[in-house]
Length: 304
Image 1 (cartoon, one colour):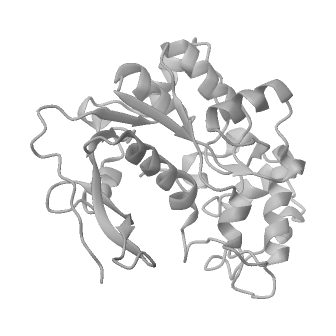
Image 2 (cartoon, rainbow, N blue to C red; image 1 turned 180 degrees about the vertical axis):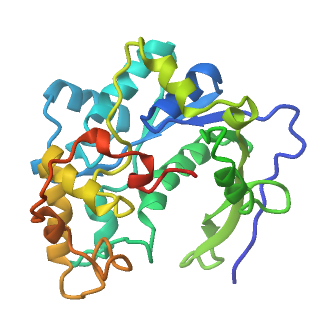
């Protein structure tokens, strides 16, 4: 039997606030100008030593912050520096959280990876959303107000998020809330835990405002956020990333090779007839591509 449980914060005088830090300029701007009661960064980890983070001292710092052994990330390594520098810049500690390693997430207890793609997009939930939910749950507090970093020209993203709100105006998630009477089965419920707010839209903040702010600040940012081999990326962008992040991008090829027993088990299943990452890597481009040739829309996150 499926139990629906609602944890309501309607009677709160003032909700606690939360900023999710991605490592990008927008979420960093949000944290600087709209300080929150809580803030956290969710890191995507890999156990593949070919993606080893190069600085041993920093690896240990990150391991201590996460509470697990940190080997490397499938995001841009620069993001590690970004979060550490942002803590220094704001004078506020950022909570570092993480879920399973990407390998453990896609293996699902079997010997063949079940690769996420546009038809089964579970990676963001498992690697980013759930660790942040678990952090909220560990605090044992009422639902918080989460500030989304949607800019003034991204109202569609806010509208899309608002469509997911329940009747009380909260975002919810399905989670284990206990055990059955015999203690042998998990009892599942729907928990409401955050209410969205869009301060950058409310204050008419655009990307150029954010870019201008960070020009002379001592915080380093990565070229692009999220996993370097994200299947939402334009194939030409993925081809460029093979030049910039060869070891990380080869990790994505290795996972496709492990899962090749099924033709649909590939990162870009549902796109371009399921183009393999190995094929993208081998493209012989007639012209050299530069970072400046790409923008947020090429990454699949333009927000237009």
